[in-house]
Image 1 (spheres, rainbow, N blue to C red):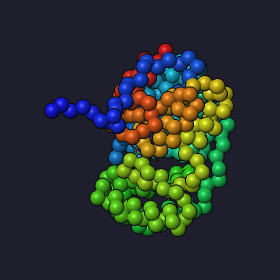
Image 2: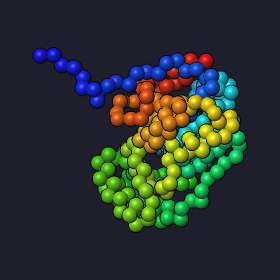
Image 3: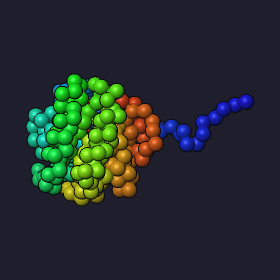
Image 4: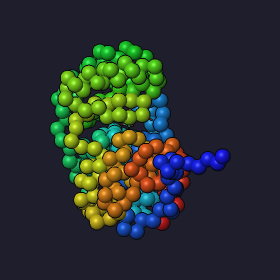
Length: 252
Ligand SMILES: O=P(O)(O)OC[C@H]1O[C@H](O[C@H]2O[C@H](CO)[C@@H](O)[C@H](O)[C@H]2O)[C@H](O)[C@@H](O)[C@@H]1O
């Protein structure tokens, strides 16, 4: 008897070498440009990464953007500069910065209530981290995986009482306003120079990146999933952050 792969298990190919001609480069941050670490604030935007982004900004003549679930303020903190030479989509699409101008909705008042409830429930639990962002509040349980069900129960209850939506992440769950995602953020960004009229290439690893993959496909571009294969709207795949950096480093 011989075995073959079912059609649904088809493997995503690696992308062809990156060419900047008439293309825009959109990059997720955590898990794509930097490896995941135990604590959300322990990430470092290292010097080789900064040099790589500067090089890409030149190759793509400014058509490069970070697209993150982080707030733009957090990203700015990691890079230690205002990021005005790049586009930026932050807070899962709520914030868009392009050409030095930023658009962002008002922070929902419900987020402060939710943050307080999370702090009362888990503020004294070793290893559970409450991350407060401009447009969301996240509960991280990477250091205490056994707490996942309790974290999820609280998030579900708070989503119901606050009207905020649940954003799934990697070993974390976030509450945020609905009405935007990385897809809408990318569409907003791509409507402005220097991105307008070019083909978007988006690289990401997380569930929040799926809306971005779908959006760039609709705009004639493509997505690249980072990490283990899963059902995805991305067309290609790279293994990990090191593979992403190496592929980006060869861009012409
Ligand atoms: O859209 P991204 O730029 O990929 O951001 C997604 C979330 O990333 C961060 O959490 C993840 O990375 C942490 C640091 O490595 C890790 O400890 C955590 O387990 C991961 O889920 C960030 O803290 C979130 O706010 C972002 O939404």
